Length: 234
Image (cartoon, rainbow, N blue to C red):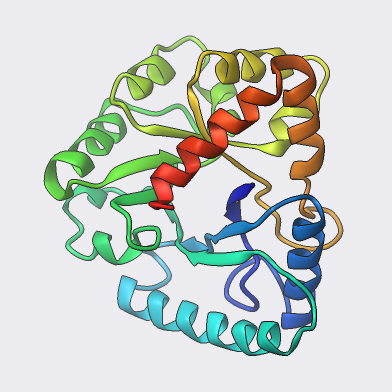
């Protein structure tokens, strides 16, 4: 199983506060059947350039890797990526390829929590045209309410971007049907815990897997994992 969205790297963003916390998150994830985690710390262009971000990410990963090597327990493999927050001009940013997930041609793209305008949507399309990079839309479930009364979600999906949903999307009894239908329709390419810590935002894909299996069948989970593997080149 793959957790496509996580903040497990220590001391780099609002996620894990220490290597100890990261190890606990990794252990919990492994117990839930996760064998690969994509580490996606927040990237905000207002805070640093891509080179600075990648240097900080490398340092965090190196510190965690040393602790993982010392741990006498199986843990998920980690693939480095970033949760890239949309910014004006992103489709022209010459260093965007530094923020790709692993050795793929994909970025995990976080959109603003507001009603999107034409400029935003056009830039998403231009990312593909300019760089050959296809966005994976981070936690699409968290934007839908902001787009009510528009066709923004339909326009986005028509661009053949990939969709990642958070496990939390399936928690509310009222509302989960929308996302289960997306799973049944084959719209979802990745699932993520979006875990930040061991308490309020802990790894939680176990319940998500169980619910999807119950409502959509075991094959539905397998199909999503197959898509995630292809995205990661596994």
